[in-house]
Length: 150
Image 1 (tube, helix red, strand yellow):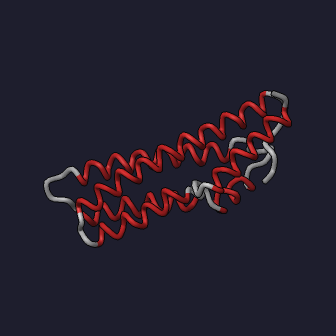
Image 2 (cartoon, rainbow, N blue to C red):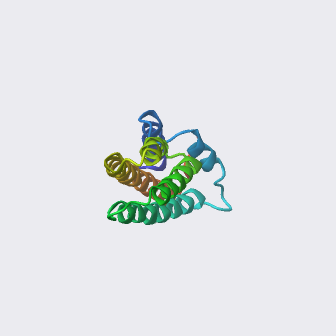
């Protein structure tokens, strides 16, 4: 594929992520911060998000597996995940965290466990999609181009 075809594929893929509700306008703002002086800015920020999110998801799993659940701790972890998701524009994970927080406030373990499962599903789905986007971006750069501005 030539650069223009790769760029078109990148735009179509990114547009689909917005249309399907995976990403919101905050992700666009993140894209606008990337330039020639920092060409990997978005990938680096998102990679940090992946590391933090997986740590939080593991901690949530551990707290919810306890005999006596510390719902304040669960709520704190969910709040962090919601905030980091919102800050980079990962819409569906953020929205799932909002529902999760409601179950924390009710001290509803079963509701929290269901939400944790759903948050994990949404997280791993968006992670896979963003990794695909970054691979497309790498192909564009390897072909001598740069990702188009949105």
